[in-house]
Length: 217
Image (cartoon, rainbow, N blue to C red):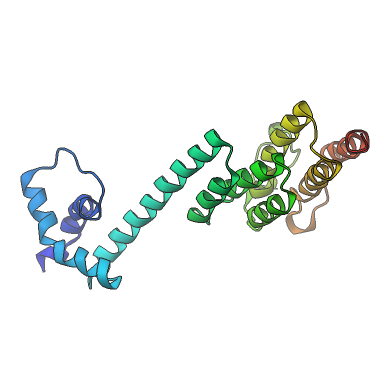
């Protein structure tokens, strides 16, 4: 059946996107006609959650996911500009598979002193486990690390620097930050039970020493 052929389905993608509310500039007349041909299927998808054609459903679902990504990115930009952790958390909800959004929301809560909310966001972020190989020159001294924990460390280190410059809001904020960093460095190499490397052990010892000085003020 011609309307089901792969070529037509690929061409239909742009028009399905147009029909569900996205822009489509410079479309050719014959392709607009193709979009109109799929209008009943799009209407059915909106009403019932399925168009009745698996290929169309897959394309519409992909469009929906792209829309969610765009919306999440817009929310996160607004959150950064306004310093609004609730907006950052809302953006993270729209990107459940992207732990970096959780870390950014958690960092905003942390820097504002909302430790319970920070804990919730970082915990959700650290639920991900993504083992990757990295060159030793990156400073981890090992070839396999948990990328999720590594990215969490980078966000926490950035927040730690900011809070040190501004002054800690409380001893609890200071304690939480250092404890989370120590846990993160301890677990970044925990691949098949590996212990922290000597380089990481030195970082942990330095953090423990800094914690004793910083958090007792």
